[in-house]
Each structure stands twice: as structure tokens, then as C-alpha cells.
Image 1 (cartoon, rainbow, N blue to C red):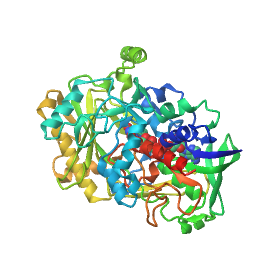
Image 2 (cartoon, rainbow, N blue to C red):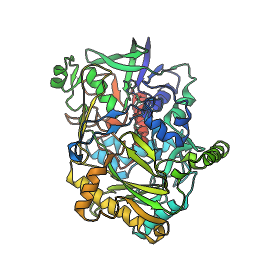
Image 3 (cartoon, helix red, strand yellow):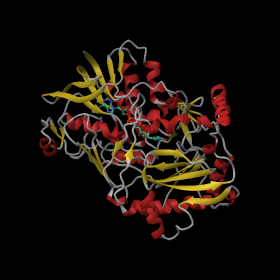
Image 4 (tube, rainbow, N blue to C red):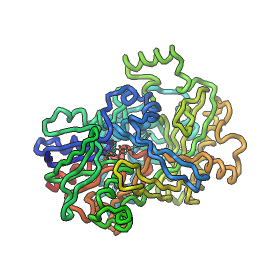
Length: 529
Ligand SMILES: Cc1cc2nc3c(=O)[nH]c(=O)nc-3n(C[C@H](O)[C@H](O)[C@H](O)COP(=O)(O)OP(=O)(O)OC[C@H]3O[C@@H](n4cnc5c(N)ncnc54)[C@H](O)[C@@H]3O)c2cc1C
């Protein structure tokens, strides 16, 4: 079999590419996705998120190495294994990042990724209900929706934040990111709006688009430095497909570098040690792994919160409300309010993100579990952490998971920022506007006060915010994997387009920036034909 384009991975980015590359009908496109379809209530109904994350069916559950900066803790890093990828199991927070993030990418040798260059793609991808037309899109495939389950306590979070000196910002995805306001969610009429729904569904019936699920790509075939096709395994059978124009790797920040390495594109010494034939020496493949370190503050409150809405009667009533009106607790995304603040007036852009949830989970080694008393949470994370990790091959066997080596708290500056952010979140809980709902602080609790207390708490509780990226970094230097036009260096007809190309993690949950990357990649590919 032969196609013009092969897209590897039908996740947040891959579904966008499958749609855009097949849109004009002139090219044949094959989309290969390791997971299955997204036809399941736990994927489509927002409240199913915790169930989807716990499931082996929809989640790769990558196990990281012990983290020596957190007493050897071993995290399980989730990643979507289903059409839509991360956008089918994520918390649906809709966040672009700041102007500074993209101008910073440009200043690192990627001038065509400045904010002014990427803004048209952020607009083209979305239909937003808020903000200024100069910044927000009104007719794109993906719906950015305000919450359909308003709550008094989210308003108290926002008012409390303003009381503590944070600017009120009605659109943190607009002209400026800094400030506090409501969060948008990737939802349409209350349903999760993944890229499988927003981009792939309208394209599915095109005769020039072939979608194969449960197809695990195991190798990109390269002859004389030209990518010619891929091998994939489906139901235990190996298949080879050829590509006439280009292969686009969109398997995500863990699997894209892994596939490059398996295909002989990576640090030559490491490849030789694994007995893999070197096709291109690319020392940066798998390096530069970035992730937002986060902590939670957890407050008991005196009004009902969404985590207590799970009695049989309430589940029935909320289910009805959801099905008839697309509203209510079943539509909840993870963040209802959001704040971007700076820990220093010298910082060029916000350095901390605070996300407010009128819902409380416990994060256990087994996964997320609803907490059964009325409580709310603020997740605090560093926007652009300095810590870096890497992805390596565990073995040359394609189905073995990769090694994920990341030290979340290796950088003292990141740790200090978390202390600052924790204190800022605590001030919001202590504000006049919030105090009328407060019962007591469950986490970190009264015992945490001095810097040393905070350091202990952060080391015990810090977790990756599920935003891995940067492992096939874009840039002009020797350590970068792809050039500014996303072509893999040293190999023709092969590009990477997903979260792995980000040179620096943006101050955002990474789904929307990834979709922007895929939108832009589709133009780069089509314009070069
Ligand atoms: C639990 C969770 C919560 C999150 N919450 C948010 C949030 O609220 N807001 C937000 O903006 N971001 C959030 N994120 C992050 C966001 O979803 C990701 O950054 C984004 O989905 C990354 O997109 P991607 O295209 O790079 O990779 P993915 O979406 O992961 O896509 C990669 C796809 O490739 C497939 N694949 C992998 N290997 C192979 C192979 N060998 N062969 C074929 N296919 C393969 C995978 O199955 C997957 O479908 C969250 C992520 C997770 C996991």
C-alpha cells in the first residue's frame, strides 16, 4: 500500500493533520493510531475523565524512573491511547500560553514561531465565546467553551484573587495572559471536544483519508536518508506501507522520540549500543524533556462541591441534565478558574499558573480518586521550569516502553517558585471573599508555614502536571532534532508535529499549543508540495 502522506499517531496533533492534509482532496492520507476509537461515554462525557485516565484501554500509563529529587518516587505519566490522544482523556483546560512563550521560541532561532506568527493559527483552530476578535477565533473547528456548571465558589476564588492583588482578566487567552478569571474548556454543548471530534469526525468520510486504529507503528523505514514508509503491527501481524510525499510523526512527547530512536535516528553511540543501524546521528533525540512541576492546595468548604454529587439520585439527575441540556456537573473540566502571576516583578511574563477546581480528588499511586467531603483545590505549577529530563530506549524491542528519566525538582529556582505560588494560593483561600466558604485547610495544612516546611511538603507532594514536551526540540543548533519547518534533520520526507517539538514548555496546559503546532505544520507541509 502507498499513500501521499502517512501520519503516525492520531492524537491531539495527528487528528488535525489527518483533516488538513486530506482537506483539498488532492492527496491520499493514512492515519495510523495505536489505540482504538473514542466511541465511549467515559471519553466523550467530561465527568468520565477520571475513569478514562484509570483505564489501560485509553492510557499508556508510562512508568518513569525513580526521581531522586523526590525521595525516589516513581510516577506514572499518563498519555492518551485512543483517537484524539491526550485530547480524549485530558482535563480539557483550554490555555494558549503567553505572547512571551512564542517570542521566546522565536528568539531561540525559530523566528517564524513568534507570537505574531502563531496567533493566526490559534485563531483559525477555535470558536471561542469570549474576548476580542483581534485575538480570538469565531469559526474554527474546536470549541472553547465557558463552564456549563457555574459555582459560587469559583466566583469567590476570582474575587479572592483580586483582593490579594491579582489583576482581573476576562480572557487569559487574549491580549495578555496575566491575571485571574474563568477558565475555558475544550467542550461543545457540554461534551468533550477532542481533536477526534473536532477535526477527525468531519473528515472521516473522505475517500482519500484512511484511518487505521489499533495499529502500532514500530519503525520508520529510511533508505539513503529518505523516509520511505513505516512498519506497523496490528493484531499481531506486521504491515509495511510506503509513502510518496511525507511522513509526519505525531506520536507525542514520549513515543515520537522513541520511534525515531527505533528507526536509527538519534545519538549514534546509544543506537550502536542497542544494535540499531544508525540512519542519522541526532544527539538531541529524547533529550530536553520538560514538564510542569505542580502542587495542590486543598481546602474543606461549607457548601456542596462537585465531588460530593455522586449519590445514585444525583447521578441520575445530573445525567438527565447533561443529556437534555448539556449542562451541570457531568460537564465539568478540571479547572474552572485560572490565574497567571509573577513571582518577581523582573520576570518578563507570568511565572506561575494557579488552576482552581470546585472538585477534589486524591492523587494516589493507583490514580485519581474522588474525595468524598466538600472541598476545592488549587493546583499551582511553574510556567517555564528549568528542570530537564530525557527519554531513552529500554531495549531495541519496539513494544517495550521507553525509559523516562526526569528529576522534577532538580532546579532550586523551580522549587522557590512553587513556594511562592503555594503561598499565593493560600492567600486566596484566606481572602475575605473566600473565607465565608472556608472550613479548614486539608493540604498542606497548618503545620506548613516556614520555607523549610514548604520544601518538605513540595518534595512529598509535587507531581508532573501531565504536560511532557520538548523531546524532539525544534531549533537551529546541533542538539535540536527538527528545523523551524519541523523537518527531521538529516532525513528527507520526515517531519515531527506534536508536543515533542516545543523548544520550551509554554505557560499553558499543552493541548491547545499542540493543536496550534499541528495547524501550522499542515500549512508548512502543503505549501512545500
Ligand atoms: C491525563 C491528562 C490530562 C491533561 N490535561 C490537560 C488539560 O486539561 N489541558 C491541556 O491543554 N492539556 C492537558 N494535557 C496535555 C495534553 O493533552 C497533551 O499535551 C496533548 O494531548 C499532546 O498532544 P500530542 O499530539 O503531542 O500527543 P498525544 O495526544 O498523546 O497523541 C499521540 C498519539 O499517538 C499514538 N501513538 C503513540 N505511539 C504510537 C505508535 N507507536 N503507533 C501509532 N500510534 C501511536 C497515541 O496513542 C496517541 O493517540 C493532559 C494530558 C493528560 C495525559
